[in-house]
Image (tube, rainbow over all chains, first blue to last red; front, top):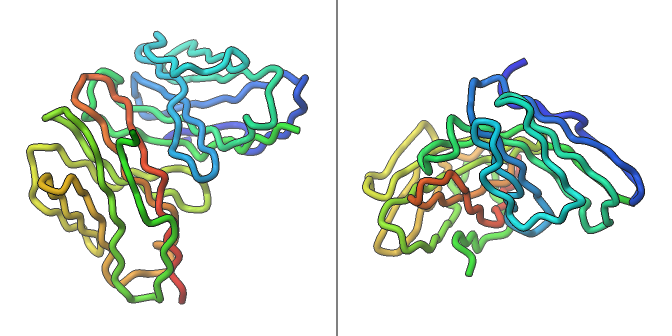
Length: 115
Length: 115
């Protein structure tokens, strides 16, 4: 595997379900990110982890819970979601989150549908 | 206020035509970075280019070229002799020089190249 991978690619869940999204990067990076992409809106940064420590929580509702056990893996735990949470969730990584210079490398995303 | 504006929501061109995608940004920082990403139908954002605020030289990479003008706060992207494989959504993004690698994305321009 190379680059940034995300599983599952598609997920349909009910509002009472609990599910998790997984992201793995094979680039030796130290920073990982979760973004939400909704139709006709800019990508929204949700969380940033730098060396496994959360450095940014962009006012995300508590029904989204991130976990970063190491610099290569990032999870997004979902529970009691709302239909408006349906979106493409993108994971990204970069060399470090402390420099605005570093480009981010993105995974293919998980298309989430909440019924 | 939105930091990155991509006024063109959708553009269609016939193959081999040239096309320019516009990007206007807003920042008070003197040090910042501008990026272009391509999002093909597969979903992952692909990094195309990064420019820093102190380098206004235009850049050319094959059929791609970028025009950075600080006087108009613009960072436009031109594809010469477009091909069907260029069909994608293109995002312009800004990272400010505060030390955190937070990207502010525009809403994207969907480019369709018609054979």
